[in-house]
Length: 272
Length: 272
Image (tube, rainbow over all chains, first blue to last red; front, side):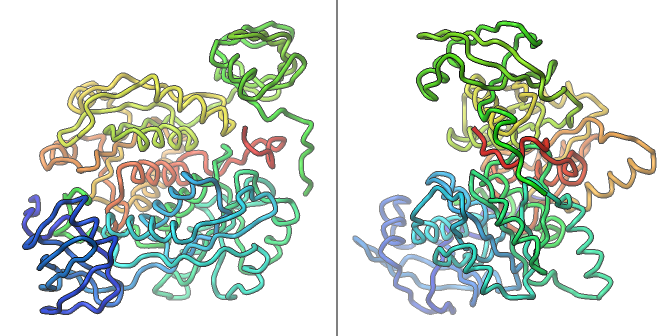
């Protein structure tokens, strides 16, 4: 076992929407240019990595930068794009620091889409989806993902369920009433899917309520839906953010990509 | 299924060290008296609950309160003490908001002891153990635990390992090198323990590194210890706080009390 050489890949990773290919020149967005110049204090010649879901991850070098602009020369590809788990997080918004936290942690835990939903006891009246998306992008840059979770506009729980795609199974974190322990529920699905010789876990979602929990009528309605699996997360009453995170972590461990390892040449790098 | 009545138990829960028994009068600590009077604005006659690990949880009523003092009359017992998982979190300290977060989430996830350890790449030089303990107590009050995690003084990783109790298994979150996926590792232990007809999961601990990860020499030394199980948490590089939380959540789901439900008369109560 040897520690990978620190020269293999730069620690700074930026998500870019432009197509990536060796020899291309990229112009960065204003906030990214500012970050490189004024926060990291990088100059021409500095090495970084750029990535997106379509093209994977590539080395890049700063060609020039100034106030609000930066141009990069794209070098060699270091990672190819690959399949990722299809796991949505549908969550009742909570107050600011904790919603930031949900966006960050859900991204690290490999969530593919964030859908804020208004429920009966949701106390927050407005969601800043742009801020959620910015937190998600930053977390993706830090955690070596190639994708960033999509952030959907906030809707009511009823609307989201009315439009629900039937094949997407929905784990509902239910703090009271009938529910299977999460590990048992996930392992049962895993055993079933293996019997059916399915290779992937298929499309999934996790739903968590607000700090005040779900209303009885909401949980009753959820339990009647054919795609819903109500699960329990143990005897303690978890905060909304903790519940989301615990469910995501268990899902990835049992049905997701928990058996994969970080890319070998990345290991040992401090993030950012 | 019916929603439990909101009259069964008050939403405010306080941890107290004094012995609890019906008819006793308790004097609260200064910070708790301040919290009831100035934050919650409660007065004489207000109902709350008090708890500790030894005596369980009891109803109580404010008899009198003033600046920095409060006396309570203890009423009926509402929960008996019971066994809880014996799961330590041994973690390299990280910067302030994130260490607060670790104390809160580890408490919600049923951790029994918090042991900060200095590792080679730990960037934080001083740990405020009192602050950790205060965060843990507050989280225990919110999440309906009867116990609060013990907070141990910070030590070096080497010292902690030198004194390690041999029967306590240690899950090491290893972002590189040989490691078993966490779900597989935990399920293997579960299957083994069931074969041996053991009733409990026994004493366990989880170890997470600092933001910069473990040094090669640290991971090498850890892997040689007979009680260590190195585990992987998937392909993304998780932040230190996320890794701690994900490992705790998976452990509780597979080996801990994940199959238990919140006390029936509590369900549906917003915390705090």
